[in-house]
Image (cartoon, rainbow, N blue to C red; front, side, top):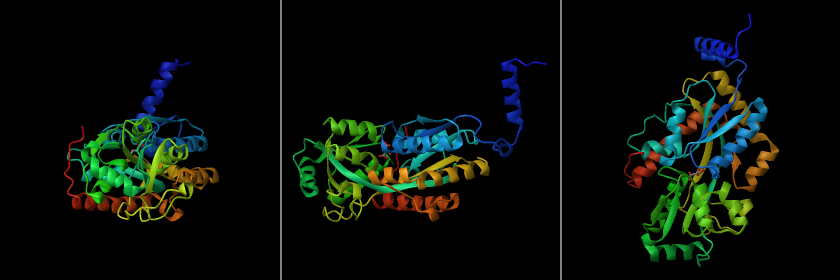
Length: 330
Ligand code: MLT
């Protein structure tokens, strides 16, 4: 009559295995959800994922647990998410790097174009060129002159091949015609710590985490990677104003589920992301750190899928034009 706890759990597991995923999606979520972040804690990807998870967790009445699976420019964590059960209990948040990876790696174990169900675009914004505080340069022109003089004795941090900081460092070096010493990190969180500590000369980081450091006076800022200044960084010139209009880099974030995840789950997440980015407190938080939500017409899973197609194309062209050779993800 009375089953032991172990037997009840076993019975539920057998029942779950026998039920189609769509039926399991009813009442979703029934247990905590893992959110995979593909870079180290404390960086911009982690910051956005934590804000989202906190908000969606409250909406769902369930705990969302962040797992930082960093490495190989975000491809290690992406692989983990691609191979997770498509049941809505493992979710991926990722940025532009998802669409840059196929142009940069020769041995990806997943197909970025088909491994995921896009659940919705979150936010977009520019990056900011930063240096350690102790560097004597004051303007982007002065920084460029210093970098030209130092060449590969000057260090620029990045979060692995395919990360946004990699894209920005690549564009910067192309634009100024100098090869710098690229120093890899598992995310720009730890890279920023070393910039603040003065162990690294330069970092181009997303506004999300760059703005608080600039405002706190722990690093120097030279230009934002967009044609407009950021309201939260009124003293930092646009790329045009700083004399380098070609330094144009736009980042964006989205949420994904493994391919085959029931539509009910995707729709619940899409609605939850919509509520998250429409929350005035989140809009204010985004604005304070130089990022904005995607407009409503770009927030459906279908619009997200269309955007991804364009971005795969964009990065393939960008890296082909820059003659960047594919490498092995390790
Ligand atoms: C991070 O969170 O570390 C960044 O998103 C990495 C990057 O793309 O530069």
